[in-house]
Image (spheres, rainbow, N blue to C red):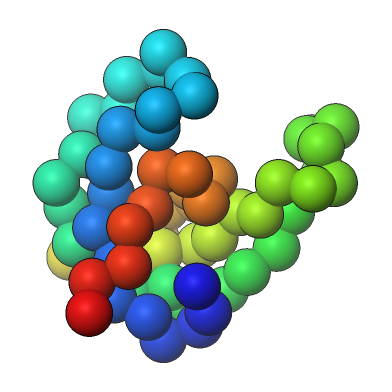
Length: 65
């Protein structure tokens, strides 16, 4: 995924953390790893939804084609 892609928020298969944003659609506006994560291999994205910009780990997003 890259900046400008249309994505849908989904439930991560590797995490039990439930996000209230499942099903929302947005556009990726920035890619980057936040300073508090230990995993440099994880990719995080700022996603502009209809209300605001939210930060999601890549496995919570699915590209819409």
